[in-house]
Image 1 (cartoon, rainbow, N blue to C red):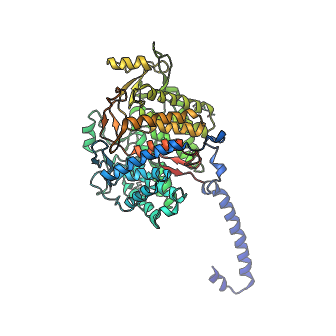
Image 2: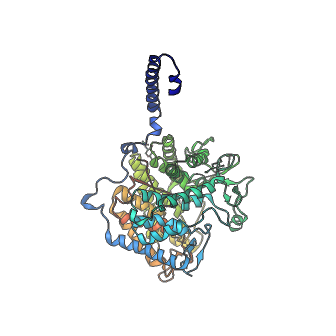
Image 3: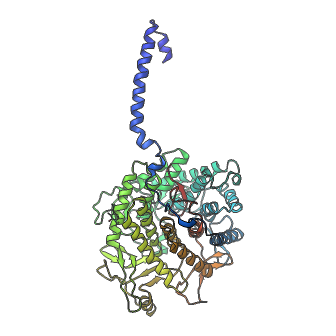
Length: 564
Ligand SMILES: *[C@@H]1O[C@H](CO)[C@@H](O)[C@H](O)[C@H]1NC(C)=O
Ligand SMILES: *[C@@H]1O[C@H](CO)[C@@H](O)[C@H](O)[C@H]1NC(C)=O
């Protein structure tokens, strides 16, 4: 520019021109800033919307319950120490035999999934060991096919959460060697780049697996059908709601941390067929799946908030909470609200009173090709937490109360068993909402459980799952009612008593087993340390630690920073 002015003969003209140009440029820049400021500017704290956690904690009730915090932390130390002794570097320890398993590509799933729990608990020695492993693994190489859903929620979420916890100084700088933070982020980027081909489908919906050697999305491997022969086969690969809709939080965090939009773009595109559903919804917000990843059409009519669908609905709300200033956050919020309303209307059901158990409980069923199924999984107990979070965020009392009622139903399943732990799945006789009784108690045992408790176990195992204590954590932080801390403690003591082994904590075969007859199963999935212990610990910790006003917990329990 300046060069061209110098070439002009009249010395005054360039200055006039320059001044005019400056005025015009200033005008345009101002206009541009004004118009682009809404999406581009990060919102001020008050733009985050209403406070989520209870604001007034009377008589210091929001402080830590120190003896209980310590006990839960001890459980984490026991878990970590024994994994380290028997299975270091492998995905999981086998808690009864002391062996190990590598079902998650052998990158040390336990270590990555545990890191954010270690960080919150302040277990610095253990965290240092974990970081030493994390920066050394090659996440781009594996002999097995990679499951993009499990890999995103466990590995990618675990790595990104750790970076956020370091950046926010929850992890003090003295714990992290120089350069480690960047190395952890680089690991996340490398892994996410290898997951890229998952999104390479005509609709953007993710492939069931990725072949890292070929850099290609691939269908379900034959083992999946061998393991579950009832799994239907369709013309093209299909995807359920949870798999399609559970990568937005992790990828948003990754785009923020790496400065590369592609991750968030791909994740947005990949759940778009659900969020902007082009098909008529019988109950607004509830999407029918599975969906064909080539055509985008639903191949069956199933909807619910239970296993396989859950975290899509979870992420609608949490995406809005994570990034309130995002251009789609209103859409996510309204989709969640519609789905929550429809879920309540169609899929919740009160149980029938029995001679000996008069109380009715609110349980959660499923819609499956024309039938309302009176069966609920332990997994569905995440939903009360979502109603509580949504009720607080949208300032909706009805929702808060629904959350409380649904949580009471889950608590009842814990409180009723001989072990004090709820079953993997159960059924009830619907009193409201479900016109037909699809499942009835057949065995004497089921009939007896129904008479005594108003439900019977369909699958009596406990797999160390977190959903119940997770919802209790939301109950505590949002309402401040002491009973939720009590419920968390009862659950923890029951797990200590029945699940603890020499090598960690084990799943159990039957939550209704008689005293002394509890059979432990040789499995301890990484969500035990990523979620179950984390939510228990957070319930007894100071309420300012990992506050719901500052952090959003992914579906694997990894806290990510909200936009500020
Ligand atoms: C993004 O999606 C495209 C397909 O649309 C895929 O080819 C690419 O690998 C993905 N990249 C990442 C980083 O996810
Ligand atoms: C509050 O939640 C209830 C229950 O889901 C819903 O029916 C109602 O429309 C919500 N109110 C507002 C103002 O969104």
